[in-house]
Picture (cartoon, rainbow, N blue to C red):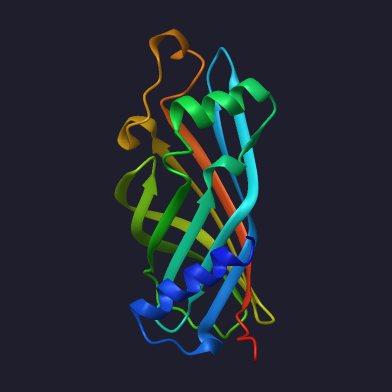
Amino acid sequence: MKMFLPALLLLILCISAPVNAQHVYIATGGKVSFFSETPVENIDAHTESMSSVLNTSNNDIIFTVPVRTFKFKKALMEEHFNENYVESERYPNSTFKGKVTDTLDWSVDTVMNITASGDFNLHGVTKTISETGKITIKEGTIRLEVSFTIALKDYNIDIPKIVTKSIAENIKIDLSCDYIPYVKKSK
């Protein structure tokens, strides 16, 4: 299953534009966390199941996060998250498909802030977003780190009145992943 997602993402990238394999980078096991802070309770969840494909020839970037893979400190929070809020059985993945909008030489070691714009899908709702992050290119690998905030109401995630003081309206999301060059397997 771990290799299925990158292969699927690569296929999507290949369909959307002609690609040269030396310009395609994949990341598996990327880390995503989200944090909700309220005076009553903090909610913190993590996953290391994010997959991504980056095409440096056209700056296309795609992420897929299986929503059910988020782990919480409290099992009941995890259950409510999956069943009541993000409905992970109905909406199993959160995705982003967009472009890095900055011009950069992907072959040169550097650390720089970049912007990516595209469509972010969560809970069956797609919104166009533009977020900044940090790219580190070193010796043929690329590391991406991004932090951004979403409003739950923008993604039709309803919070029952009884727990509105325990769940923030805006959730901070942190993402980091390490890309390696995609190497086509020979048959």
